[in-house]
Image (cartoon, rainbow, N blue to C red; front, side, top):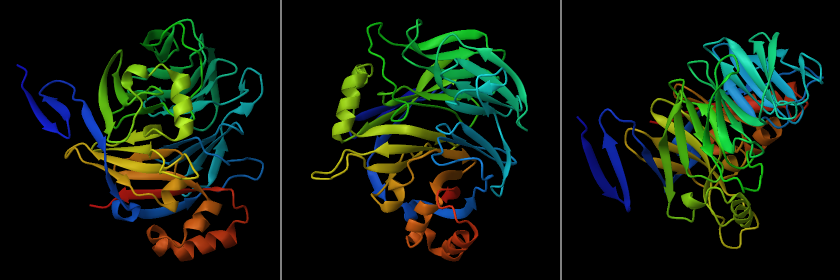
Length: 374
């Protein structure tokens, strides 16, 4: 028996179905000061060895015992303790059997108690244990640039537009054998790499995979070989039409003009909320085409909250991680110092000053642990 109910609000129709996966409409509208949305619970300095570099953290993942941070430009993946102290550097740069020429992305497999690292240049997938010991490496047919492992130990990869399958996503089993390809694109599509702007792969709160194609306004959830649209984004401001999601060059050119509002490259889900990055259409006469905000969607009330424009959010466009209802962001110590007088950080002024005394390198990252204000 299928029971459906519909409601009309702001011209958008939502359908809630009993026993059927539900798609949420995320209408990006309400703006709120970040200090009225989040509270800062902890600042964790990341203390790494001098010979390593974490200048631009691309991916942050949180485990029961600490953090994993990736700087893909410096081919540096670091595991730290809960207080941010480096425990091990994972993977070695090179072309040897146990080395990687690059690390495009990584994923923590809690079920498999291992780390998976992916290389675009080598078209390989490397497996390590959680202490950083190399286990094996397998070769891939396609270039992959983003990675996630689900609760079944299936490996979901965003494969680049340079592939003979003409698909943007591939699912492998835990041994690296192909299960399926998904999200096809036209054969005449001109390849362009947009993962630093839009598109993301991550795990949901329940251990399945969430995937967002570049230039699309929908986040999909993958349950093994099955997938369905879970979050549909809408706004009163101009967004790229869903039917033009494969017109990537036009999409990129329009982004460069600042004339679109769109979902950025990072989002994470808890049981009750979706946290996401959002670029708003630029204001008239603004010198910048980037107006970055942080959004929160409440799955119970269907309300969406977007942070107001501020110095804080402009510096928080990097990776995020969610554990329970705690949300983690990454900043540099230099940026943290710039923000120390902001309301959100007022209770941490003494600690920030102490960090400056203890750490002379202003480029090192700090992790902000936050939670929503009730």
